[in-house]
Image (cartoon, rainbow, N blue to C red; front, top):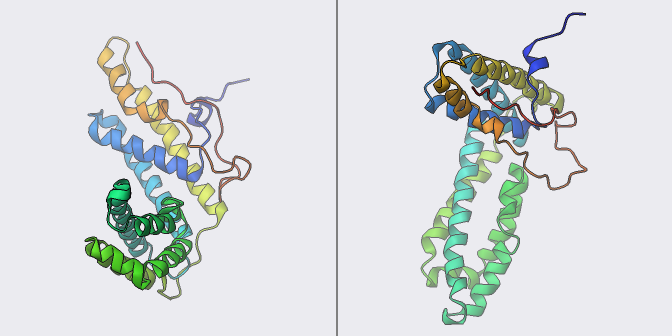
Length: 260
């Protein structure tokens, strides 16, 4: 009986959720952009990038509710994330002064209220993140807290944060007859199509290696380094699969690039 030698049969990939797969291919495409590669790989890179872009669009659409402009949501989300991170960095500086800081007790209380759980709320889906931020802002806008921040010179941080949050709310409140977010099955389909393109790319890279030319093996090592070094990020709960990842790609460890 003849053996099957397709890219799917030959290349074994690690376990990858849709988000993991997107991250890994992002790293591989970055490598492809910086490491000079043979022209024979150009078509494979274009196909991989196309599948990567399609999955990205679906992951963004899944995070936003129907009717939300995905591009505006991403941009607003980033501005809000940056504003919160900046405020936390600034407030942390005052916290580190301890008792030497003016109104040290009030500073510590405000820091505990805003960032007692860190910045994890910034990783929530858009509407949930906005709601979590609004809860914090309600306390921050309280007369004593806002006065405290401005008295310590943090007014610009508040102004940027307030503006970013207001814009975020406007973007998330956009209505319209937009299509429903992609289903988990559709995202799995896009992930699997991208992984097929990834397998073909791996086969193509390994096919450029020539035993008589060590430099080709070194180049393949560089191009595939993200795959060879990939470690699946830990999940918050190992027993609960992420949306769309019930049948995440399995297959043990990634293949190492060919060597001479």
